[in-house]
Amino acid sequence: YAKGPGPDDPEWLLCFYSEAELDWLEAQCWSTLGDWPRAVTHARRAASHAASRTPHLTRNQALYTAELAQNLSAADHPEEAATTGRAVLRLLHREVRSSRVDAMLRATRGRLARYGAKGEV
Image (tube, rainbow, N blue to C red; front, side, top):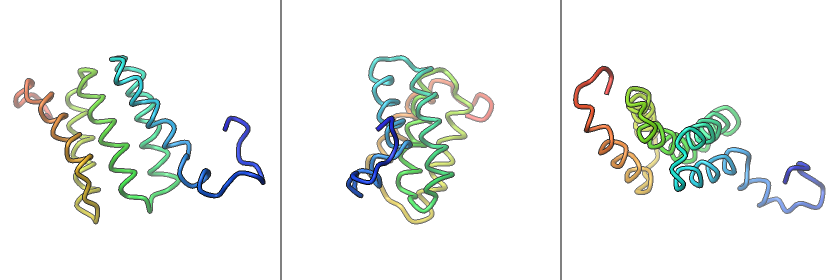
């Protein structure tokens, strides 16, 4: 994959395993290991790539951005996590429903509850 696309690559590979998808998967790995700064970095890149390169894939944007919100909340960045979570809700409001994204947002909300009404949380 590091060599970039080639003429013999199957079309499904290039469509599904984008840079955003790989960053999201890496964010999940770092999250599982509890390395929140790295998880945030990769989730942020995944969300950014999805928004700029495939804006028509709203579900992916919501998924990657929910991952970012979840990792931000775990990394003790409550205000940014709350702002990012609200961005996910705006994406879902458009046209997308995802039980996985809903579960991620519930987990983020649970982590943010300990901050009460602090700032933008």
